[in-house]
Picture 1 (cartoon, rainbow, N blue to C red):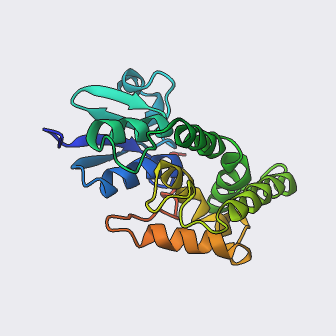
Picture 2 (cartoon, rainbow, N blue to C red):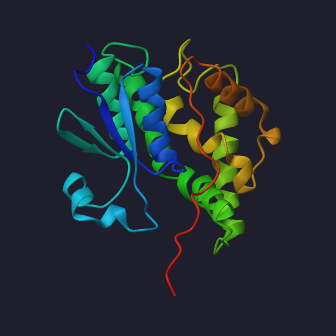
Length: 215
């Protein structure tokens, strides 16, 4: 069932959390509008945005007046609402448990190990504990490389799932964080397979110009 009106995605273009939602919208062929939220100008703290998400975070998806937040939760909503019973979300207990494991990694090790040093590099900042961050990222990528042995997709099926969508955004730009995928041939091939899917959209790799504060 297609939405009667375009869905609205409030996002920061360089955010992998926002990108995974944008990617799912595109892969499902759902009509949507992208609305940039300028975090530098504090738009995420505006009354309008806080009315959508009191935590002042992005992404926020609005579907027919209903606002949803949390990127992984939004992924589940989109599939259950617009592609129920599809391979994007396992229907069996084991598959759903394995999906939750990848959701946990996407919200856990992926953030300090890849997302944070990537953002720091894009912003020209120094990570407080760069060695520790890269060690965390390497631990995660080593795990992913092992999980992809003999597999095309992270859950092991013949088609991609939400596990792949949750992990690919930041992983595809791990080299920016200082973790080149040349050291991880299975992950590199997995990223290439996802990027070859009809409807794939890339994650932005440049920040918006900094806000100019009047003197």
